Length: 357
Image (cartoon, rainbow, N blue to C red; front, side):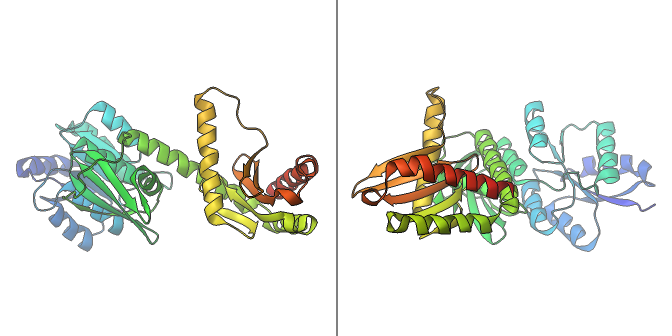
């Protein structure tokens, strides 16, 4: 049997010695390594194979947040148990729901810690177990500990910043996005690496929603994107391109542009004379209309919407569960009866055939 290595990190030396001595009784199951701060822990992680890290948050030199941020980039698959004297049962439940592997409140119940360690070293390599600490759980810890900091998040070539002041999320930035939109985007990233600095140069709070609501909405958007991606993997793009080609041939210069995009993020799948900016704008308008109708307790939108524009132009959007098919027409060259009664039904039928394969 391979003996596992458990690293315990805490700056209270008597507590650390007591814990190490108590766990020595389980030496046949796991070996206990100890560190008084994050710097010592990093040296051990760099030189020894560690199967579990149990860490306090408030420590000198390099605290638990800095250690967890370092591990997110260098050791993302090592399970983590966080110890803190500043939690509540409600926060514990939220953290576990959002991806932190284990969370224990000080003063520790020794038997509970032993059970958690055994559970982790026994099942930690299972693919259905949560490893490390998620971005969402890390943000919850920042809020719980009233931290003022700038958190830099990196994932797959993307980078963003989240600014906290006394535990409140004040601002977020990534690329050209700022505020809640940027925060929602960053929260949806996976395989993240984090860096933390204990400064916050943002004075004005531009994010009005509580962190919990930001996280929940971010998860919803991420789930929508993943659902759309799964459907796109089975969609017959070649068939959609064929339908659009026939459409352009039948309508000639009456059809100025057409695009099919995903509701989750506005990304275009196929199109003709594509206008990404217009697709993004129409997608935003669609979500605002849907939300407004829902708040007003009105019936939802049906199969399509149309907008008459200045200069004799008209936008026409076919609505599907996860997609929209937008078209821009020259109204002087299109018969509305033909559009509503012939073209739209044919496009809807063709789209569903492409979607179901």
